[in-house]
Length: 75
Length: 371
Image (tube, rainbow over all chains, first blue to last red; front, side, top):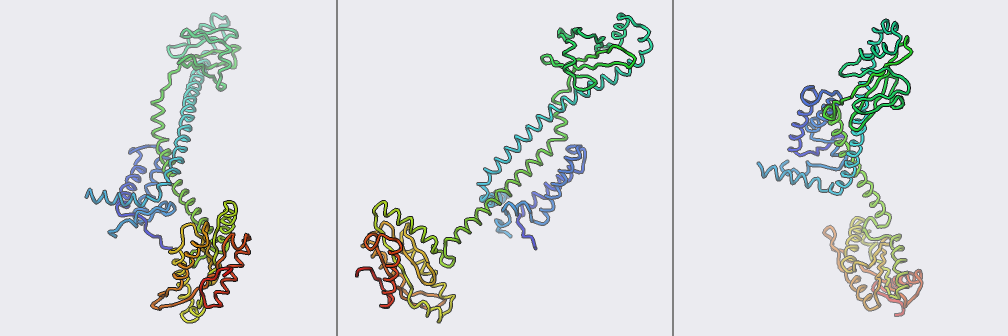
């Protein structure tokens, strides 16, 4: 089943930046924390955020009944 | 650019408007989570502090256990109490105070007295324990060599590295998992509230479907029976009158035969709309099945009731425009009044039903019992 987009363009840009930042913080041991568990969590959330930004579909939005995509009249 | 961003943010906030009621659920969940995290953090802090003390006791024990082993030979040779105390004073330094442990003795450190029973009762493990005196903590360790009949008590005024040190550990290990848990909680509560909303909607839909006619959205026979019973009981108690009409559309079957069932269905939908145009908010109209309807007018006397039924008849017999066709049908109304015609619910329906068939036999119109 094709997943319908549910994210606005601005949402996707914001998530891309956030996702990359979180992945960087997760991979770089000196950036924020040296704790392995914390870094794994940061990287996990980062990957999730970035992948949702790339696909334009957020599964959490879907199950929460939220969509920012439909409000975008430019698209 | 600013206005574009502002506009988009406003639009996005509108997208979340449906979730406004969800914020109550989110705030409850987040509050519970924050309380839980705080309690866990406090417990973790206390456990960490005690762990630090235990580490200190173990350290004392390991250091002095090794020292006693080295001095065993000379110690064994000097049996006098004086010499034993001498050994203890030798092992004492600025950090640790060492005493010969004798039952019943009281030790005095920094103006605080420690009895042997205090020490025995405050043990944390086999190596030692700690005693709190006001803001000070004194760790102690009781060390004996297998060759010794007596023990040495090592006491240390303990200085914790303090909250700051623990906060550093918290920042490094606890903050991000805690934020992650809150993040999960927010989304989890959003998903949960959405599920509750969906279930509530489905339940309301199912209830609506059980009590309404799906084609016209009018009340069905079940809902009418419920409403009729309520209105009847209320009218009996309050000594109010009400009017009941059974309505059947004339020539409707031929419409279905000529134009098809789709046109027939659309006419029924238009009939439902025309009922709503005439009736008051508290009147009851139901589709009993096919082209048969019933209209109940609570708290209405004969004169007002007949006015409304005439308007209904007029509306129903006006032509219908469906899919480019002008369709004309008739209507037969049989009317009964409470309490004038009967004080029995079933009898009132039977009277209206009989009168409707009588009207039908006369090619439509309104028929009232007794006329």
